[in-house]
Image 1 (cartoon, rainbow, N blue to C red):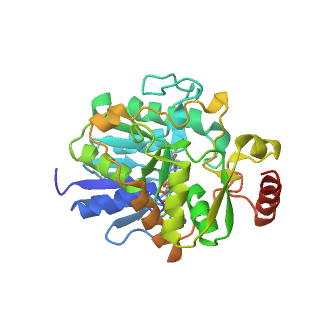
Image 2 (cartoon, rainbow, N blue to C red):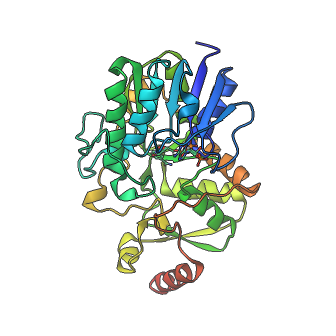
Length: 341
Ligand SMILES: NC(=O)c1ccc[n+]([C@@H]2O[C@H](COP(=O)([O-])OP(=O)(O)OC[C@H]3O[C@@H](n4cnc5c(N)ncnc54)[C@H](OP(=O)(O)O)[C@@H]3O)[C@@H](O)[C@H]2O)c1
């Protein structure tokens, strides 16, 4: 349906920003609701100020009606419940951006939409910056949506790792920044290790395609199977940045012996451990059958580098470990690894 009135809850950072951009490109009228703290609204939207974390913070939405709402920013179930209840009388369709973190078990392959999820509570309160309950709260957020909206009027997407311009987590950005500085770069584990990375713009296109048709459902929004490898990913970064960096691969065991923190200190690195067995093997079959398409990873890397090189920066996420390894520690580990060759 062209020319819809779409409300985006948030819309100024990464996923929400991409959803707004895609919706405007498709000719929709977009309203965003946020506190005006994180960043400027995308030009072309109607920007409405509000705070979904407390009663009274959403007064600006009372009496408003939209054809659909997209909620990329819900982290606390009570906030999602509050927002859904206010919107339900005037807004027919609710699209919620959840996460594959709803699944607690990453030992069994495959993780698909029927896999067990964490226990969740649709009215759980809390601090959105407390990431310890991220997965269970995402379950609670999904429950909150389904409590207010009938199943055929709600879309839930569960992305895995999202990459692309305006990234606000920073794993991919750290690699681009490190590789742009050139020299010998510590590359973790195996170059052939698979990765499953979704470009934020492909996620936005999938969400909008379904929103336009009020097409409901619950989908793992990941490429259906690994779409790149650690070696290819870092290789694209060398090409995009033109730095001539040389990758030196250091085995999992060496990094673990040095207590390198997987995922955070070496971004995107998940060593071969039983608890990671399914990490890059989430089933995206249902989303693929429903039309999710994924651009080449080389395009994502090139576009992200272009954004970063023109001044783009990851916003720091409170209460999360720092992303990336310091130069001194990298040199030390490399020195030992090279000496042992
Ligand atoms: N990055 C990944 O790899 C990944 C993977 C899986 C799932 N996800 C999910 O994807 C989503 C990413 O969201 P995003 O940050 O990119 O979305 P976004 O919509 O681009 O940015 C978050 C928005 O929420 C607004 N906001 C924050 N607190 C608010 C409040 N109390 N009241 C009203 N607005 C508020 C912020 O603006 P103000 O601060 O100005 O209010 C900002 O506009 C998250 O739900 C995350 O769980 C991400």
